[in-house]
Amino acid sequence: MDRPLRVKVKIFGAPSFALESKELTLELGENATTEDLLKTIPVKDSSYLYVVRKGVRLNSSSKLNDGDEILVVPPIAGG
Image (cartoon, rainbow, N blue to C red; front, side):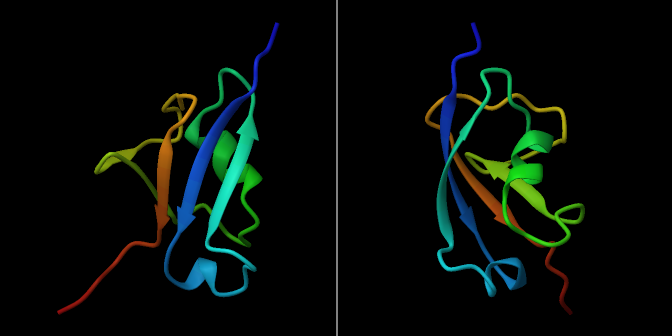
């Protein structure tokens, strides 16, 4: 049986500007990955965003865990 897992997501930078809240709590399937999370958040183009858990950038196939706190940020460039 597929048990849902809950993750807290904080969205930073330009992707957050059109959102009502920059913090979301999502309920995903038991074997959810970073890719599943990005398909769920209400951001136009999530393909360029970094997904970070505990200071480590995750790849698209990284498994999520119940209770994770995830940061979603655009890449940052500067000079």
